Image (cartoon, rainbow, N blue to C red):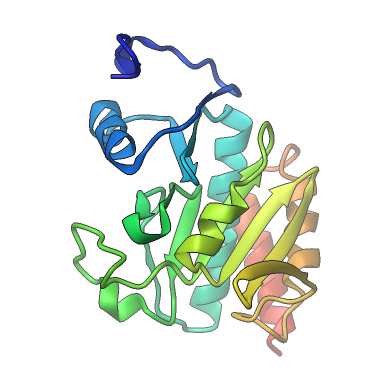
Length: 215
């Protein structure tokens, strides 16, 4: 409950968001229970501020495409991985919670096999998170608090990579996960063309490009 109104009675149009202020941890946990796990909305929580947003179809398409292109990279490099999608990552000691658009465990993938519940007091955070900023900016503070080491953020038609250094994110020209590959240029180019080609075609085209990079 928020005041006397159930969150289940509040409709958030696609592309819109609501903010709830001065929400303590117990209220945040209760809101998560009330919202349930089977929903389209995403949440971000930090320092008693809660954002609940409803993505646009355009947002979802970009998110899936970036995730698919990342999988192509991982496959071509023969790297193991696990994805937990938009799972809720939260840590009471940091008063932070986030649901990424997508997330991947690469270095720590073995630790996540068969994982059914997350506990960031013992489980590692994702190695890489994907965020698509079309209508609202990513809640960077929550990611910093949770210690996610790398974020790929798509905004204004371009991909940017941020890495965690001394507790804060700095923009990077390269991905620490793929330090020798032109990730930003390659993925941004396909995202620019994504309104003209099928996602399946984009995957095939990107795989050919990655093979050329690796020669």
